[in-house]
Length: 276
Image (cartoon, rainbow, N blue to C red; front, side, top):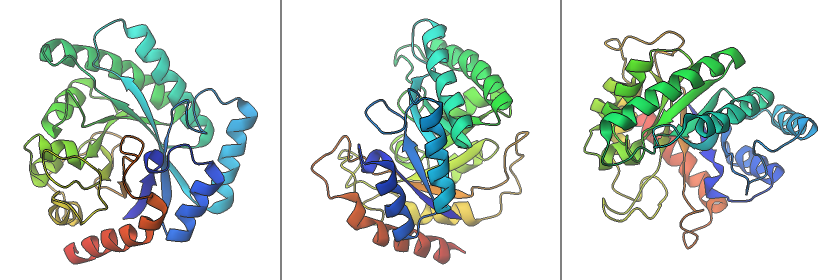
């Protein structure tokens, strides 16, 4: 299993420095936060996109995902949501990233309407993604925090261009055990985001292993055979990537990510080795 980290933990850091950090700490890839305040975003022109792709190729690291912010289950017109998603998918294609992350963002008092919007928009996004050689991943987040919520949408979409990004924080806070989440999402999984927090009520980010999230249980689940799961067309039978997401952008007071990277790598590898 390969390791990546999200640039949400190093907000605004130039790409060459991000790649240096990843390589020096022994990570295999990077999840790029694709937001206008970051160096890589859909506003890049063709030359800038080529430069980003060349930087990744030169250092041998993988651009795992463009973490975008379209909210596919949100109320309102489809057109702006799909335009934002389409721009991210084209950027991913140009940079060679296999995945684009999207959020649900549904209305809390309209589960049926949120599901309908997510299915409709994700089906269209999946069609575009497949044509570009990319997959669009719906994250377990906000209105669809549990694996059950995301799986409900993806089963209705039923398209190889759509998949799931499992954020372990939100499924755990939603009351799902890792084994249950994996069973529900296995047919659709792109990769897994790991993190840690002090308590269910306090979501201040911590390095993995310093908080309460059941990461050892997660590692055990992910290393077990998933023979009972039937993969969706185009989906893999197991997870190849763990990505550490450290939300320093939203919690500027926490420790700096660069100094934590070597210990995080060691801890994650130890969890996986212990579960093997």
